[in-house]
Length: 325
Image (cartoon, rainbow, N blue to C red; front, top):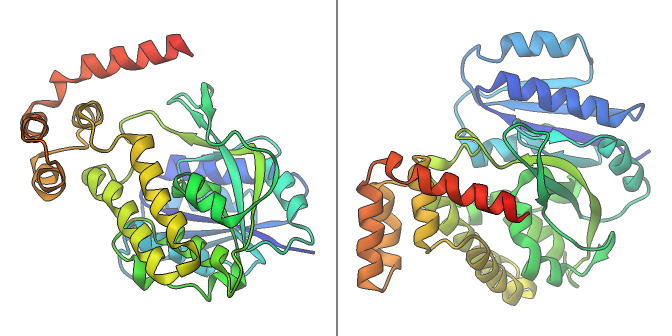
């Protein structure tokens, strides 16, 4: 039997962690799975959660890091703990859709794919309000070059990523250090293979609920633009590491930038309203990546303005989008 492990990097959010683990167990049904938790809290914040989870399953492995690793390295740590055939990475604040783990477990039986993409749904801050889904593509195989060039952005969400555990060990972490996207760079190496680019297996029906609203949604918001430009840095590293995917990775960076509008004033205002953008990020990133002087000045003004100044605009825009949907 092909085995599946759920790998959860966690940091001081016990309520989310409990919900995530219980949703995995429920979605697995009678399929045997193991859960691996890499705890970067460095204190006893999650102790009560672990005691509660122990009552539900004896297949939960908990590892407390000896030092704080940070978001990116703790993702790698969570996968390193896994001793199953496939490792499914997921964030502690995400949850599994009904029956999804059982479906994936069954789909992996006899599989030989190096990377499996589990589609996901976007949900609101109340978890019950579904806002859409990441990809609208058929179930089945997709050429690796096509996946990287068009849809690599979607693998930035770790809950979409299921990797062949043994082949994962043959990939590198060093080229992607500091990018926030080490796991995506390693996935590109998996798809590049040792010769011909390998296909990605797509599971089209959403498997994980990705919470995209709420002020605590993204743990990296103190360096929002570092995350955005980190994706470009990761793509550049893939070009060097995987020549067969060089064109695809460069296209992936363009798709990512266009999709999220990194250099738009609208995004800067939204991030400022959520305290995810400040003058330090302006100086570090936007001041030297914005050629238009007027726009550069606007980015600066936004960075020093009080967050409350933009909150009504952001709320109105979200209401307008919900009405249009």
